[in-house]
Image (cartoon, rainbow, N blue to C red; front, side, top):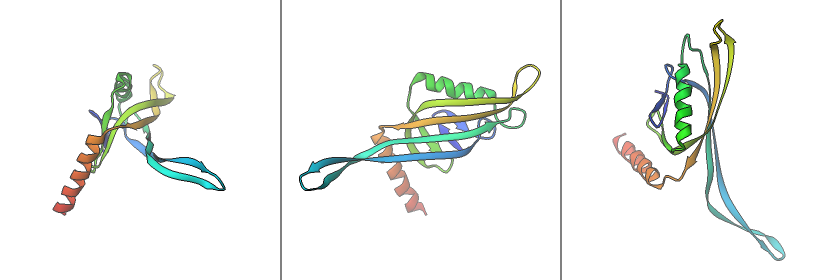
Length: 143
């Protein structure tokens, strides 16, 4: 298992990603001041987005059905826990977009190669963050 988003497991048998991009941001409010630079105040984390890019080669690795499952998950609008194969808990994420490009077709129109990109965005999950911090502390105790 490479990673799990809810009940969907990214792996060689389902949909293996070759690239993971993670973008984090933080918010800082600015207040103008007379005769000086604006004052800045940290107001908290901003959006966190992860994009997974991969290739399905249905004859060798990956299932066409995997993309249908991801689409069905996105259609619900639900937030799903994202957990790396190492045990790292990222938090709760919603699926924002799924892009596919099909190439190298068989005579019946089935694609031999399907490139995909899935973009997921973190949503508020205060309880899960506490759980991951506690989990990390327990792992440190075991090591």
